[in-house]
Length: 143
Length: 167
Image 1 (cartoon, chains in turn red, green):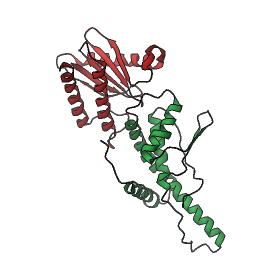
Image 2 (cartoon, chains in turn brown, blue):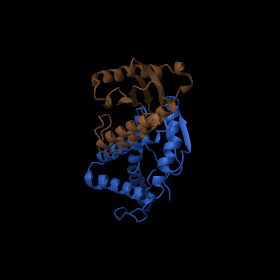
Image 3 (cartoon, helix red, strand yellow):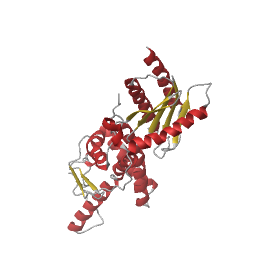
């Protein structure tokens, strides 16, 4: 199950962060997202380690914690998408697919002429689309 | 799934925008009008670059991004690629388009200016006026390019130069 998704701008400013579990406290998830920014920075600045995935937008598994796995995605415009999940065996293809849909939703949200670049994404349509994508991800991987 | 719009609509919109800003809102301050038009372009370019780079691998360096602007971005917006790309390898790039789509319908107004008497000067002034009007129409595309490059992580200044007008 996906417990948290986040969009972080090119100056590491949070643009959108949303957790999807009731019980766990959101602060912990935010902390995990925050930590993953360093991992992304390291990946991007030391491209040798990541090998063949050199210039892909999908960054793969950033790091596992006890209960979660964190995945990352970096767009050409240096916007980061971060996903925290409790699923321990996720297929890369599913993850790529998720991020592609998520990216499409993000692009549509920032193309709104009333959206101010660099400010938080407040669009309700975006929130709705994201929660739909998150829900359908759970179905896709189980079925 | 992209929705399409007739090219004439885009042309008309551009012409109307330029004339609104240059002749009405800021009729007395042409530099201000230019800046306003450029900043509209900037926003458009900012958003378009987000969309058009969606399915691409990340750019390795600035040259990759410039190539993207010359090829894919240019063909998305102006329906053709850049004809010539030059650089001094110090961060200046010159992109040359021999048939810039958005100016291809602009022509010199042949009706002579009544206030000018001599034949030579009137021709020169008509030419001059046309160039001025055309350059006014280039602030918007300049803004688009600047917005796109800035969003791709390359802060820059973009200016346009017309060597000879079509028609």
